[in-house]
Length: 156
Image (cartoon, rainbow, N blue to C red; front, side, top):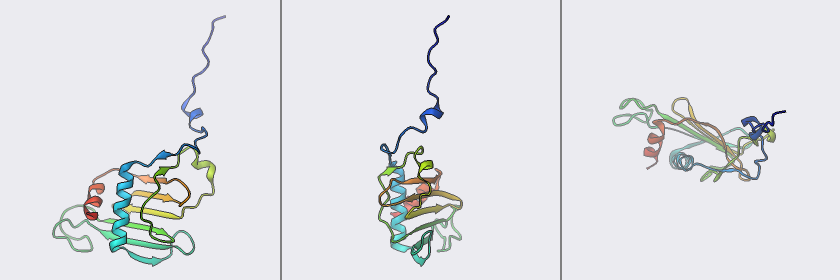
């Protein structure tokens, strides 16, 4: 009888490995974008009661979109879409966690409720991050695009 090699591990057998002790490092671009969004909210954001959890506050700002010659509502100027930035939580955080939860761990942590939620709309949701103080970051949505340069320009 012919010798056969053992089957190779497939992606599906590797995707649910025990990764709870090995969160990944948050990408520098996410750290920079979150810092820019949070600084805009700290400087110019309007706070209102309410959010995803009881007792939360939501900070919001609508910025950009006007380029040169635009007004505060984003009308006029260039064709850039205005950015709508919001963050909800018990307070306005100064940054995001330096680690990201490994995708294989997330399905096993239900129900998981975030303390903070940062969203950027341009006009669709292009960045949506959720985290708790004692847990790694969860990337809900991240879509690369021109909005990144616009956000960084607004924050400087």
